[in-house]
Amino acid sequence: MKNIFQEINKYTNNFRKYWLQYIALFIGIDLFTQVLIIPLFRYLTTAILKASAIPFISYQNIITIISTHTLMFLCLILELIVLLLVIYGEFSLILLGIREISQGRFSLRALFKELWQSYRSVRISSVLLLAVYFLLIVPFADLVYRTPLLAKVQIPEFILDFMTRNIWLASGLIIFYLLAFILGIRLILTLPIMIYQRKKTFLAMKESWKLTSHKYWWKILSRLLVLGLSVSIVLLIFNLLIYLCQLGLDHLPRNISFSFAVFNLLLVQLVSELVAIWISVVSLLIVVAPLKSFKLQSKVKKQ
Image (cartoon, rainbow, N blue to C red):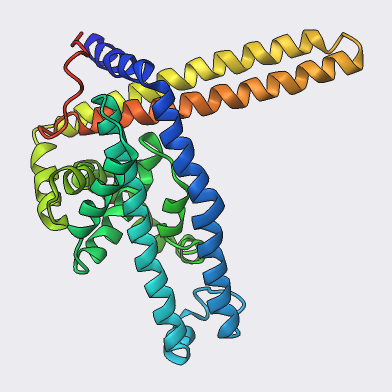
């Protein structure tokens, strides 16, 4: 346990040193995703469905859609492929940005140049493997980095609703998620290997499986769990203190207590956002630590 906290402290020191650049990286990507990418894909999906006079997609009409609206179905598949490439690009920016910032050599020009080189290493044949990979990491992706785009790659709700109505299908779904979790943690290094070492998807999966063998996967997972639990406790205590403080301030005149309530709410949101970025940086540094192609700046001493 001591080694885990020492490792977390080492990565926290790196975050403290470059905190402004890390915040700019994450907020910039999040704003780009929320303001442009998500509305664009929502508009495209709506336009495709309207053009085919289909109000919604469910397990009751999916066969009909495939057989009678083949062109629309192909358009949705094409949109999914583009979405996978966008998600790959988002993770590439995050991973490349963290590497460049942690080593003290961040440059937007160099970052986008590396992003382009990373895209050039992706083959069309890798798209299916990428889809499988993203499905596998969804169960615990929030432990590392939370992005609303991954929600678009999850199993559709109407399929989950259909499967949970039958005990055998529900049991199969539970087994699927259990296997997905096991495979996901064993293949968690796939994307970093693809991005940092320019390896193809299948080769990156094999390398990730090799690196996480001999229970090394538990070393990664245990650090992520300890980090997540520690942060949850700290945030719980912080929010509780703010709440108790506001209870006392509520006895003041209404206009004063309201002003303090707005300030406290803003404070909670700012602290939560800062903590979310910090935990994402530390988590990703924990995940990529086994890769020889990734090293922290030499000035960051080991604990």
